[in-house]
Image: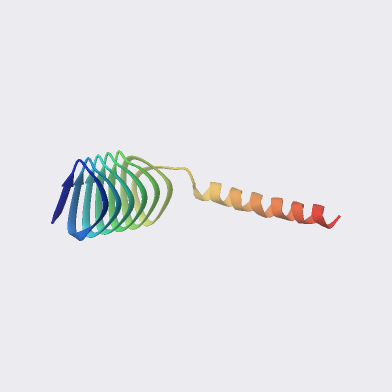
Length: 125
């Protein structure tokens, strides 16, 4: 088991990783626990995060409490009082605050198609 606390770390890997009050660029492990920290990229089978900020997460089982994330991709995601920009999961539990919802993504895509169509017609004239 790897355990880090109170520092800035470039890369961490192992079977089980615990990170407390630290910043890490990349984590890859079977099981990851991150408390009051920040991480750029996390890949794990099981991830438990509390009071942290993450850029990208890819894990089979994710537990997030009081977190802010940009992108979360997982099989089973449990969320408590957390916000994310984009969440992709088969099963989600909890109250998720997501910036890109399916209706918003549809509206953005439709607007882009219409806008490109108008621009193409204006160029032909």
